[in-house]
Length: 286
Image (cartoon, rainbow, N blue to C red; front, top):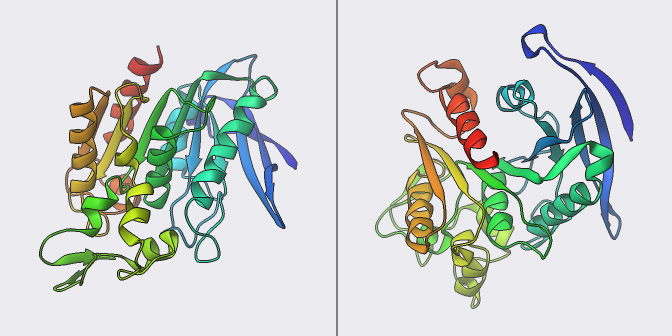
C-alpha cells in the first residue's frame, strides 16, 4: 500500500490523503486492491465507493473520474475506487462478489478510514453501473449501503436481451439478433451464448431488477437520452419497477447525453447532473 499526501486544486478548498493499492481480498492467486481518498479532519465522513466500467472485460480503479469525484470531495466526501475480476477469465457472480467484498472491507475498516458506515454510497458507470445496482439490491447481510447511484447501467437484463425487433449491440443496430440481444461483453460476463440451455436462468439471476423490493436503498439513476450502447430505457425500466415495489428511486435524464462522461462534462447543458446528484445526496443522507 502506498500513502500520498494529496493537496487538491485550490477550487476544492481541501487537503486530504490518498492511499493507493490497498488489498481488500484475495481470490486464489488474484489480489484485489482499492484506492482511498480521505479528507483532512476528524470525520467521520460520508463516502462513495466508485466501481469502474469497461464492458465487464476491461477497466481499472485508476484513474478515478475527477469530474464526478471532485464535487463530492468539495462536499466533504471520502471516496474509494475498487477493482474487480474481469471477464472472460471470470464470469458472474465473480464481479459482484468482489464489489461485495470491497463494501465489507470498507465497512470493517470504517474507523481507520474516518468514514461513517451509515452514509456509504455505491456508484459506478456502465458495467460498474450494473454491478452497483445488483449489489445495492441483493447484498450480503451487513453489506447494505445508504444509497446507490448507477450511471448508464443495465438493470433489467431479461428485458434487455429479449427486446422485440432490431437490437442495439455496442452502438450498432442488429436487425435480427436471434434468440437474445446479447452483446459480446454481456455474454462474456454471464458466461453464456444466446443458445445456452441455461441462458434465461443466468440472465434472470444476474439482473438487478430481479431483486427489487420495498426496503432496498434509495437509487438515483443517471442516464443520457442519446445512449446507443445502453439505452435509457434500462434506467426507465428500473425506475418503473422500483416505484411499483414502493422503493425510493429517481432518474436524472441527461438530455443529449451519450454513453460516457466525456461529452457530459464538456457541455454545460449536460453537466448539471453533478449538482442534482449532490442535492439528492444531501436529502437522502441527512
